[in-house]
Image (cartoon, rainbow, N blue to C red; front, side):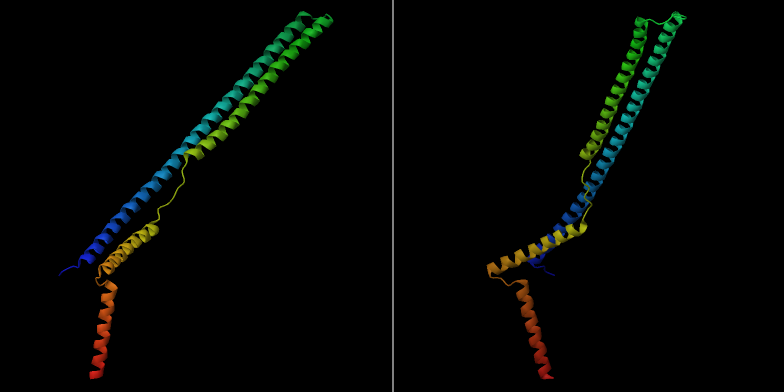
Length: 199
């Protein structure tokens, strides 16, 4: 059995398109899996960073609270010693100013602690936003494989090869496949018509 050269070229083109289709399909699947894995890594990284930031702010709050408590105890002890030392005496203006100074110093310290805590909390919130933005920056768009589109593309490549060969035949003055089929159909119709006339 002899295969026409154009048929052999078409078979080779179809085989090549099939191999390219399989490779492109495998590539798309691998790319899809890599995209999903990248997003999982970005999410896990963000969760770890969130946890670290939350631990850090809890520690800062605890530390600030402890400092405030220690300052309060220290102030109460100092005022108690002062009052105990002046037991039974009326407080003079300078003593009252000294007591007011204790309260002012304690209030300033507590106010500074609250301000610093507020700054740390604001920074914590900015860090959380940065973590979220970082996760979005590390994430990638996930495009699932589309074998139907790949198949359509491979089919169009085979069809393009076929019609290119047909056009080359026509330019060279050879009969194209459609012309051969047309002649065969005409011959069959002619034979069918002659057979029916003879009967």
